[in-house]
Image (tube, rainbow, N blue to C red; front, top):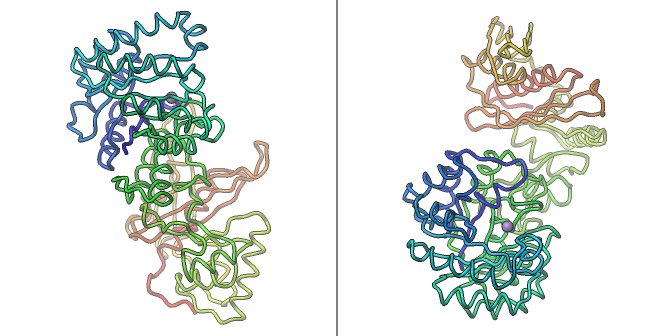
Length: 492
Ligand code: MN
């Protein structure tokens, strides 16, 4: 079976998403490398930038087939051929609704357009995937007719598009075999009713040999069948060896999320933040003993790591594991006290960061810890005609250090001035920045959580203030203080 990835075409039609040619090339390279068979690079008729992107991708010598979306117009097909694409995804409306209301044409006129376009594209040396738009609402006899004649005129492959997500798995099983008998058939599903994955699986079972997918399920409206979910469902549930390098799946998903600026839903299957995160006491305990108890697949398979987070559902086992990882030695009574304080924090609706756990542990264990860093002064300037600039004075191991930095915004400038100031004692990266407004208004208390790393060690910490910049500074300093401590100290 084959994967036809349309992240760069249907996925880019996600409202609000727009990728530059260089960003598209970066994604296309990754798609080809991971083993996708066809990359739909874009729609040549859309814009000059789009054509530039298709040309860049087509000239890059990728092993994947490079395809572009075209209408049944010579101009579109000429663009595809001139830009160096291998194939065209030639889309023809096939439902009477689309033929009459959108195109204001007759079935005969649409057939003539489609077949002429197939012949023209073949004449220009392109592989042709003839695609029936809104096929699930079309008269299936008509779909078979337009497809069969299209194949006689040279179409290499066909595609059944469930354009608005109204297909069911049962209907797919009914209509796909007759179409798949004509020529190799792709299935293109949309997730408007949350059934895209089920429909795609049903169509593949019924004889389709290629699935149209997008990374992270991007696509018009509710999106398309998600690549990562389909690959893993086929591998794990149906024992299909897809040939996809699954260890790279999470990397690909993160890349696409970052470049499209569409965040992954935290509870998204396979690639969501919570997909391999455990908090509940019983679950976390089970996973620590034997991961298959509460994990269907090992996170390492797709390039991820398991995370145990602490909160009100945490039990003794996960707290003990976390304390051990941070080199704290606590007896039974102390662990019980730490667990109860963590639950109290969780009950207040807060996420318990590493820095919180360390502060709690140190209080309960009676450890006296003097911070590596303390803030002396902090200033930030921001406005309509200035580059956001921050300056900071810190005491670092008893020495006064002053640093300044500009940034994309005041928060960026603030964090970067802190990083610069501590560069001499440690190279600290900001991995993640998350902000929550606790109440609705502009006077709201803002809760900032950050994830910082230093030499592969990662820590989460938090700051809260009605001033978003001070909350950010507080969070970063709390995390830095933890990261800059002696790595091998025994805390008991
Ligand atoms: Mn579509």
